[in-house]
Image 1 (cartoon, rainbow, N blue to C red):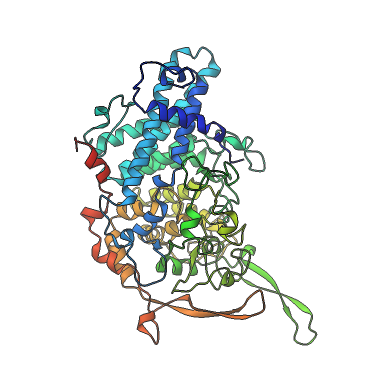
Image 2 (image 1 turned 90 degrees about the horizontal axis):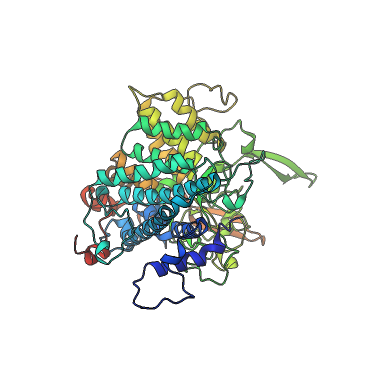
Length: 598
């Protein structure tokens, strides 16, 4: 299902490696593929496009873990309270790995997309049938989507949007050396690419069956019109053009192709990949090309599980204290049967098992996002959560997303090979961004309509809904009985709904949200004032032994008896963060050192 054109990958990469080298020979090897002999057919261009998809799935492009630490989402792991992590501390420079890797991988993607675009332009006049022209339009739409997307990422991340612009394939070394272009020129360029993709691509590359499955699963990882609309809407949202942004989000909703949310447990594991609520995922497959090393660019697995998991992984990215507590306090809908747990207790008189019921310990969204020691309802690596990990070193929770906790007993059991798709764009984010546009648009915004879309996201996870009175869409649900205005609902979006729903998803969502709202420094200062401590948790493990996880239950307030056990986050970030220095990645020194025009 997930082997998205992987069989073409080796050939595609070969072409790209050959075409990027200088020809030092005077004779042509008849067995060698060259640019003169390759870009001749639609099949050649489609094979070349796979190299763009291959670059798209390079984890160096997204820097998920480091961007989580750079925002307010993650502690760098390995116990508290000390860390030297430069992203968490905000002491990184233009020589740090994350910005250099992001820059390098984005421009590799642009270079490959430009080759495909040039190849397609070279054969455009040979499209002598309607079928060929449609295929040409599709491939050009995909290539320009990715070029536009890579530039959108660069524009959103580096140097206030002023970066290098390549709309061609450099033929000489000198052509690689450019000066920086104004952010307006970069923005205009990627908007045109994404608009072209929006016009030429279908809403889905393959339709859905009545059950919500893909008719042709192999096409599930290909980009589409909805992905272009998502990128366009997000870019306009970042520019505070709420009307235009809303038009693209409403187009996705109105298409009828994606106006369904996936199940709550289908956003962080191999379960539920490419579901109806997913717009674009980065495809990985642990069963393909198994001889490749997990770090190989030719492989088809990712290593997010290694970075995150405490069971066979490095536990290098843990939930920050505030988000741990926010997940703990995520209120459930007591009227939703999904929140009722059935269990059995022994009758003290007869000794017979008696059926009992209770509410879930935590919301479905919480249990599927992080592992909490006192979560009795969601197993963790095939055992109860308290037994699944150690919860030592003042660690009070672990991220579940992007780890294989549901299918194995340890990441070691799958030889560190993770095939979990990365959820880049999905409908929950579209609903929440659309709600923001409704809140910010006009005088006071359309709060009631915005509440509808926020509640659709919450209802998917059986959460308590927002509002003073029940809404027609969910009349039997439990509501929090709060009257929201534009300010209070926007605060809820900023500090609860978006971070909890979208943690460890998308492209730098939390970093860019905090920056565009202008609250990053204030956020670190607020969080640095909060105090927590860990309470002990006792349970009986699968062997029947009584076990205590010391200091594992996160609790608000200072430790009652030992100040050294009080937990605090972001003290250094609150001091170090400087809007002029840290709001954007700097131009990497790998570029400034090599490029004489910078």
